[in-house]
Image (cartoon, rainbow, N blue to C red; front, top):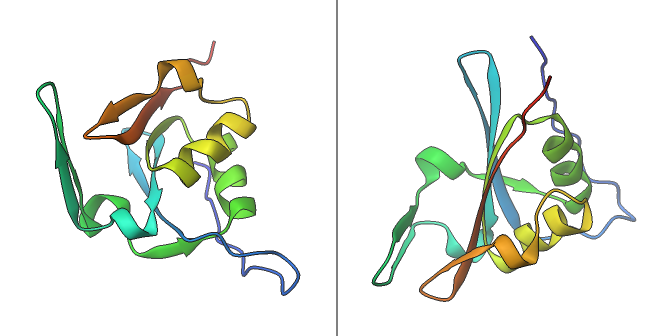
Length: 115
């Protein structure tokens, strides 16, 4: 079993306001992350609805460096928000053309298939 550890941000590293939580489910690492300002809000449009809860997304403030490391280790990833998804795109894990928008808020789900 892999264990992901949170690192304290360095004093020279800019803290980006994101929230994340790591879940372990059926021997898989599930990472949930969102932009901080979206926490505890609900968004919906004609096609979908999403609730951004502390229970799933957590309360851990996360830097870009931490999120990048955890994106690499996670098997399943659930992301909400411009800043959070931009980091996944920067790391080559999300495609901006495949990102959903729910009530104007970007949302991406990533499942890594390992052979």
